[in-house]
Structure formats: C-alpha cells, structure tokens
Length: 460
Image 1 (cartoon, rainbow, N blue to C red):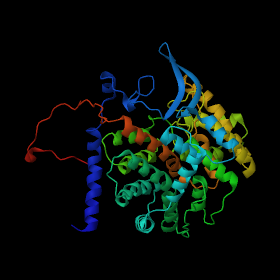
Image 2 (image 1 turned 60 degrees about the vertical axis):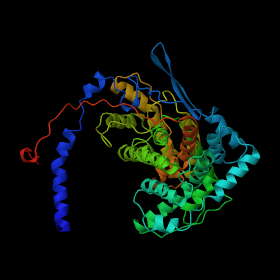
Image 3 (image 1 turned 60 degrees about the horizontal axis):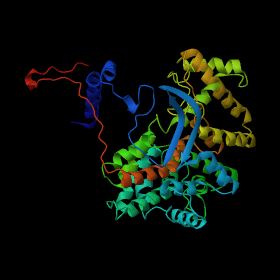
Image 4 (image 1 turned 180 degrees about the vertical axis):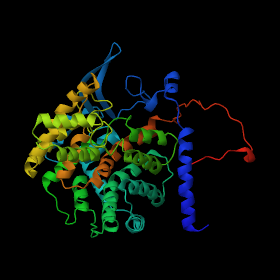
C-alpha cells in the first residue's frame, strides 16, 4: 500500500473508531458512588486518600473538626522546617538557598558549612553532560516540547551509567545527585536546540561554570550573552526553593513512589515523574495564568477599575470568556484554603521586581484579580468554599519579568522538583518495600465471543 493511501486509511479508521472507543470506555458516573470509589484518590470532602507516610514535606491547609473542614492559613515545611523560616534564613546570610534545600530534602538535616560546600562542589562538578550526550541525544534529536526531551534524556542517561541497575542506597543517592546537577544543563541545551532547529534562531551553547549556583548556572546557560543580574539570580533561586517539594501526594511525587515501589531503576522512576509534571493539570498551570492574564489585559480597558475587572472575571467563571472552562487559573488549591505560603513569599518579591522593571501597574492587576476572584466564585457558585491564590499565580509573572520564555516555565519546575522527587525516591527505597497495587472493580459485564463472519462493522 502506498504511503499516501496508508495515511488516508489510517485517518478514516481513526475517525470511524473514535465513537466506538468512547462508547466502550465510558463508565457511568453513578457507579463510582455506588461502589464508593475514591476518584482521583480523593475522599468525598475533597481531601486526599491517605496512602503513605513521609518525613520529607508537610503541606497543611485545613483542619477537620467534628467532621467539618475548617480553613486555616497554609503552612509548608521541608523536613519539619517552615518554608518562610528556611527562605528568610539563607536570605539573611545573603546567599542562595537551593543547594542547601536539596541537601535538607535528601538527607533530612541542614548541612554544616563544610557539608554544604562539599555537596555544592559535587553538584557543580556533575553539571557537564556525558561525552557525546549533548550532540547525539539533544542536538541531533531536538524536540518541540522540552519536557518530552527531558524525560527522554533521563532515560538515556541510564545507558551512560555502569551501575544503572544497582539498587544499593549509596548508588541511588549518587544517581539522584547526578540528576539534580544535570537537569538545568539538559533543559538549557534542549531549549537552545529547539530555538535553533524549530525557531530558526542562532545556536548558543555555553559550558557550565562550576563556580556558579544552580540559579546562576541556568541563567548563564539560557542567555545568549550569559549575562544576568544579581536580583534575577536571587529571585530564580527563591523560586527553585519554593517549588522543590510539596509532600508525597502531588501527582508527580506520587508517581515517583508508585513506580519506585515496583523496584525499578532510578532513571525510570524519575522519567515517570517528569511525564506527570508535563501534564497540563500539574506543571503547566503558570503558563495558563499568563495566557489568562493576557486575555484579561486585552479585554479590560481600565486595569485599575474594580468594576471592569470583576465583570470580566465573572465572564470567565461563567464560561463565557477566555478558554470557556470556568477556571480562574492560579486560584484554588487541593490543600490550601486561606493562603499558600509559597505564593505569599513570591508575591512579595514579585512586587519589588515589578517596580524595578516598570510593571507595577500589571502587578496591581494581578493583585486585583487575586482579591476579587474568591468573592466572585462565592457569589456565582453559591459556595462557601475557601479559595486561596496558589504559587502558580505569580510564578509565571516573575519568570516573564526575568525574561524567561514560556517554554521554560514547566522545565524550571522540574529543575526544582527533582530534589523533592529524589528525596521521596530514597524514602521509598528505605521505608517502602511493598509494590503499590490499588484495586479497580470490573463493571463491564460479560460478553460472548462472536465468530469473524458474524461481526458487524462499525459505521462512520
């Protein structure tokens, strides 16, 4: 069969079978209630089903008293340390904190000065990719999606590791440190390759510099002239710290636990987490916020008018504007009810940067949307549910002020969260031991085998 004819056959086949695929895969909604299925591993009140224990991250956003969920101010702790204390701690000492945060997550304690220097030096020495990797795995096979390229690169790194199948804890820790060090380089080179091969831009490839922090190194690698300001590096470092960990229940971290519980290799488990983070319901929310805010800026004439902004938000909630989903992106969270501590920290720094970049008017529009949305949701949906602004609401805005393109928003999330994934991977190795195997109930009924001559073809 000729190529064009085969393509036409495939297209017709897919169109014809679409309805059949839907028909035979749609489960009646009432069956979930009948069998008390925890859809999305959520309880009826929206809280997560308890499936594991962790000592790494604690996300606190509400309390349950007498079977009622009561909103409280959000708290986030890394290994028991409040995130606000962690950030203010290294800021007061006028240094970057991501490396220290990664050490804390991996090993459960704050490093001494000597331990931090050794850890930082090891990370810096491992940023360079294996010989031939950049040329053969990234430049020869550029991807239009950087998260796809990252997942592929993680799996390929398996082939460069002579101990890839070694499950001994020292080896797993070494592999995790390798990945934390190499994620920024892989992503930076993948971005440059995409810009060149899919965007007709000049190809700028810089060697990693060992003396730089993770935030500085990444900015050095993605900028054509390698230039960045201290404020830019400081703010990116804070963003990396804020995104590094969020408990064991978020989708990508749970994916790490799930896949690692099968006793697979480190690279397979982390690649699964990357695939999860790529999902639009997980790691891509900050891009959705940027697009939504661009839409608001386009349709609201006076950004300072509470009346005009509120009217357009109402249209979004009523599915009459923007993407017609009814979602105000960056507002609401699965755990946080009153506030997201990460958002509070990032908003404070976003305000300062907006003033420096001449974008204070835009920042105030963000603040207005943040203030109005909970009230409008309550009014339109007749709901008493608390809606907190989450970290995604400001992170994209911050990245845009840093001159970082949207293609890199979710990959930056991965640069940060690999430290949390690695910590959970180690925890699974040490305290797991049992493969995760939740139950699914079959509700499809019984059917008889039909001879080929009596089967009825599907109509288009």
